[in-house]
Length: 287
Ligand code: PMP
Picture 1 (cartoon, rainbow, N blue to C red):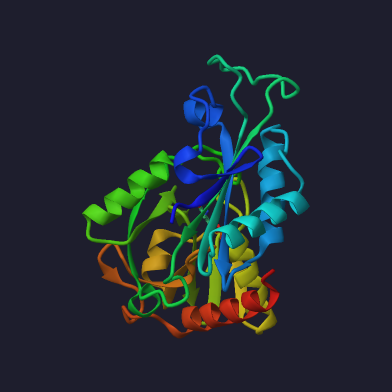
Picture 2: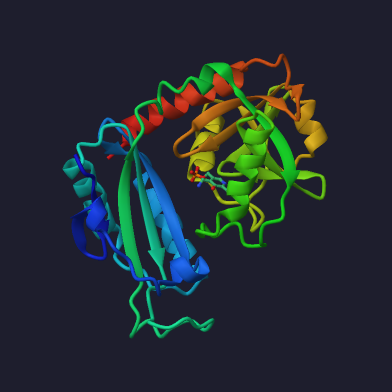
């Protein structure tokens, strides 16, 4: 069965979906995106993702294509039309297709932003074997631009990082700037030392992960200690545990950094507990 996707106001089979070659998302990576997870046909933390989308658009002076209520309705329609049980919904807004290539932003009154959304079915999000196995990461230089808090579609370097990790027989890369870990290629990075969860504080150096925020909130409610500060790669290697968070990974343990085991080199109890709490709590509030 062909997937039904959403393109600028219309639901169409995926092979009939089209965007202009003049779209600024295509020509200039002038676009932002969100990924919302679907579990049991329901959306996890939709309002968090909608709020971050509004912020990303605002930072780039891009007109919101629709309000959150309308976006929610399209998310639900896509879930229903595609019979999606477990997976994700990808949403992308770009500054539209002005007709010619020009560095200056087009007048938003003449060039409306483009909105594209589609589903991806991923049946092993909850029963992810990586939760038991743990991830192996390499460290690489963080050479991305300085506004990583805006969720733009400029994902070439993170893609290259993933490929560097694969070539090294690993799962992912942690990005390092001035000796300090910023985040993973597509996730936030955390470590645990002497029972304290340490994770980089929010700034324009990292994406403000929706899952990061939820996990830290749940950790604090469970009386776990959390320190939001930058940590060095050396600290990460000497930590008792390490883990990542993202909308589709939830919480996944990291068991090896640059070939050296983290702690015992096996998934640790804090990451396992946080994954369990995150899934329990998120499923309760899924809409
Ligand atoms: N950092 C980066 C660079 C990411 O791409 C992502 C996922 N899009 C995250 C962190 C995690 O964010 P979230 O928890 O909102 O998925």
